[in-house]
Image 1 (tube, rainbow, N blue to C red):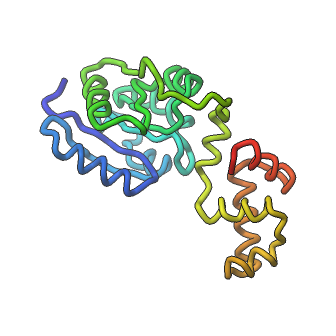
Image 2 (cartoon, rainbow, N blue to C red):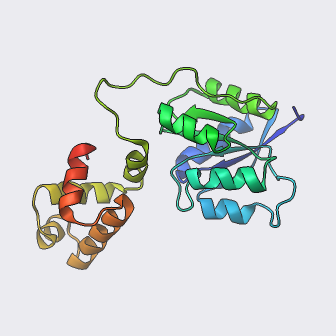
Image 3 (cartoon, helix red, strand yellow):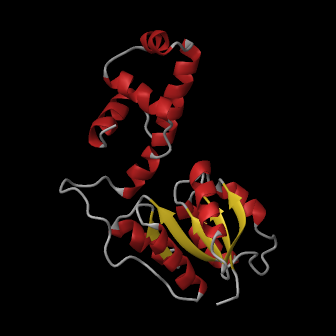
Length: 215
């Protein structure tokens, strides 16, 4: 393990990224060399053509502006194999763990983990050890949403979630515009963005999706 492990954080939640950087700054053997908020920013940050990775460990969220973490993992393994990826995500299901490990991740830490668990995983991966949780956080007895659907749900903004609720109540675009003090054009834009983010084609499918995933 190098005297200082160089860390890169890629997550689109700025407050979380800043908190992680502040935590890691207190550790003498760890050094944050970058904080990025999208897959595109990561690819722009990495050297091209690929050379030695400018970081030892990448702390990677799965839900990112394109390309997302799932798409990035095989590319990183192929082009920057020296960059060891620790996935840091809320998508803590056995299926997701198997998928990211097969795609080349060195470790997985659920976002529900405490600071000690995260630091231990980072240090283990920096030593060249793979680390995946033996047990996942306990889940409710009801069936959990599939990971791809959950990933799409995380793309929604609070305003978009609000509009989904109003759509499910049967409000028209004009009704929603009046209730939210927005223009009809803005509400229509939100509706189109919601369908795009959730990969749906019509309001009927959106209503069913909302029921299935408790939106």
